[in-house]
Amino acid sequence: MSDAYNFAYLDEQTKRMIRRAILKGIAVPGYQVPFASREMPMPYGWGTGGVQVTAACLTPDDRLKVIDQGADDTTNAVSIRKFFQRTAGVAVTEATAEATVIQTRHRIPETPLCEGQILVYQVPIPEPLRFLEPRETETRKMHELEEYGLMHVKLYEDIARHGTIATAYAYPVKVEGRYVMDPSPIPKFDNPKLSDNPAIQLFGAGREQRIYALPPYTQVISLDFEDHPFEASKAPHDCDLCGAGDSYLDEVITDDRGSRMYVCSDTDFCAGRRAAGHVGRLGQPGAAE
Amino acid sequence: MTGGQNSLKNFGAPAQGDRAMGAVDMDTCAKVKEDRPLLSVQGVMKLYGSRIGCTDVTFDLFPGEVLGIVGESGSGKSTLLGCLAGHLKPDAGRILYDGRDMGALGEPERRRLSRTEWAFVHQNARDGLRMGVSAGGNVGERLMAVGARNYAAIRDTATDWLGRVEIAADRIDDRPSAFSGGMQQRLQIARNLVTGPRLVFMDEPTGGLDVSVQARLLDLLRGLVRDLGLSVVIVTHDLAVVRLLADRLMVMKSGRVVEQGLTDQVLDDPQHGYTQLLVSSVLQV
Image (cartoon, rainbow over all chains, first blue to last red):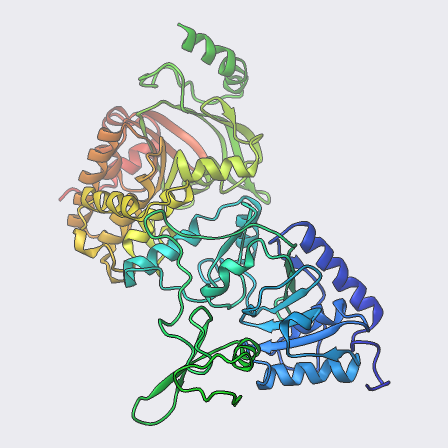
């Protein structure tokens, strides 16, 4: 751990300001709370919002897990994990069940979360209405007055053009019957896990300077039509390494002739299953790649 | 009649006060279809700094009635329409919709009215349509805004309305950018009327369309207004449009109402000098 920085990089007053925004977000589930986002030593789009929220939540006793698209070992995850090891000196882990704070980009871990855990999402565009209504003044007014018809226009367009609701990620949800919220670009497969989750879920958007939150056991409903209900979709395969049929899969092209394999996007979940002896179509017993 | 007593109680006192200020007396020219006005405008004034947008405008609009507002560019027609539709806040005067004072109405309620009981047809269809959304989505938006959540039902209603405004059903998934100007304008009308509004504001609905398309649009509008029993305030500089559509006519000049009365009466026997000029300026083909 480097002594050149305050604990978790940000100064105490900044963390205090962010904690206030988080508390307000938790008090009004789904409401986007503005906060004075700081310059972080990483580019926008790399999780500056999530990092600030994590920094404000961390205590020296915490155990941190960072995932990027479900994986613990990709660039974004590795660099953010290193960042907090260096500036906060906290313990880190790859096991979902052992972590107290999990920062995630675009996934919710497969292993169910429990009370006492905090899940921090990195959010690029917090405003679910943005691509339909470019004016910020107008979208705020729409949230204020609960004018959410436009969200269904987007879903209508999907069905008219593709026959089904083709939105596969960042699928809009309604929180506790009030605010429509962008769940960050998680696959819609993960949407049901948002609801009634025992963990605290915090969303940080650095460039857009917004924080929003879901307290534990919040009702979160994915928007849909009566005759085109919401469906949590995934690739219709089993994991080729661990054989899991109920986890979200990445498609990996393996050669120039179109061969492909499907593997769990959650690396910790997949490794855990393989360690427990599960084997998929292409996996080798007892081996963990 | 109870309705008459109500309207006396609600409107009698302030209306008299406004008449005393010199507004044109309405009773002689109002074509009374019901005894309670849907929209009652009393001494409305809108200033832009020290310049007058419109001033001292007083009239009643009754259910099922079409009021035309004509005048040259800059005469305050659109300013007045903006005040009526709630886009602009008048500096003086009162606007009562169905007996409720619009100035005292909160914004949530006003916005709810504007997507259920009111409609606004813009001169430029691009202002009133979502160009990135298909025709069906444009028509369905108001339905979804008031809570429709059944895709098939929304689509059926949209198809029905496209038919009513003479847009082929197979264009339902095309974007308005692929439509001609006349089709865009008809689509805008369908989008506005789909929730069955009672009061429609139109700002130069035929502006920028060629004559034959104008004629068809007017024909369509006349049919819809009659079938649905709409109350309409229509702003235009085209006297032919009001001759065809409007029951009553208001002539504006420099922000003031200079003459008002039954459409045929005003057009055939104009009293005010400006109205005479306006009527005589129309080209006879």
